[in-house]
Structure formats: C-alpha cells, structure tokens
Length: 217
Image 1: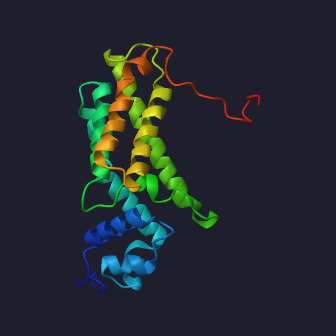
Image 2: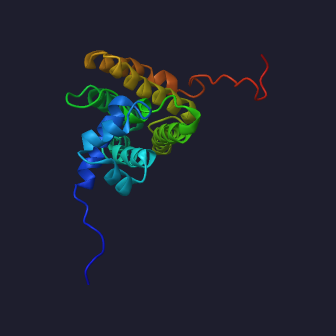
C-alpha cells in the first residue's frame, strides 16, 4: 500500500544538530527563524512540519545536547571510583569541552536562556530544571559516596552539591567570556583542594536563609 504525502527531503537528525549549535552559540531569543533555516538548509514550512515551532525545535535541541555533550558529566559521576574523583573528572572534562575548538564556548544549558521575555518563560524554566537535575546528579553521587564510605557520615551532600554545581556552571560563563582552558582547570583544582575540608561533617558551605521565608532581615 502506498504511503501518503511526500517524503521528507532532508536529514532530520543532521538538521537538528545544526540547529542545536545555533541555539548554543546565540541563545534562544537571539536566534531567528532565518538563522535556523539557513543553518539547517531547509525552508520555514519544512521546519514547522518537522518540529512544530521554534520552541519545539529548541526543546529537541536541548534533549540532543543532553544525550551528547551532557552525557560527559553523567559518565564521570557514575564511572569514577569515588565521589571526589567523579566530581573532579566532571569539572575537568567540562572545562576542556567548554573550550574545545570548533564548538560554541560554554554550556548550552547554562547560557542559551538565562533571561527571557515573559512569553518565553517556558524555555527559561526548561533549562533551569535541567540545571537542577544536574545538581541532583552530583548530590546522588555524593550520597553514594557516603554509602560506600568515601565520604563521612553526616556530610551535607545538599550544600556540597550546590557548591560544586555552582563551580560547574561558572566555568561555562567564564569559558564564554574567553577565559583560557588552563585558567579554568586551575579553578577546578582550587575547588577540589577544599574537598576534605568541605566534606568534613559540619563544615559544608553555610546556606543563608531566603528573605521572606521565615528569616529575619
């Protein structure tokens, strides 16, 4: 039985990867439909038919980024023999990736939608959630470290994960600002130098109360 409709005249996966790089480099709001169609080598009707909308395309691009570039952190955390080594490898691996030739500097999830107009708040929220998920993975690896004995019982894994996630996200911003790779690796080693002190029970970074949530000025 013959199928109805004309076959798609472009490689969807290749077009999606090219769109991902445009969003990664320019950010969601600064990227125009003309930018996307030029990079993808298609016309607007084909883009809408394949991806539904600019936001739909962006969401698929973010998912692709997570399966490819984002997998680096997951592998480091899961495969390293200790929590400390997992965090160190994740930070170092990303510092190198953020400064790799031939790719946009920094991390798409950190940089592509830090600020959006209200009508695009769903895009900002999508990446904010992805960052929370990444922080959660770091904490899970630290909790595993406590269970396996390479972190002390009672270590504040929530505060520790927040600290090292902040270092990770900051490396992305620094890379986009043109900070050289060796300087970023120096930041990683400085952050790791404090591991023993930070992981000692009761010495994790203090969390300040949030104004308006039961705290006093």
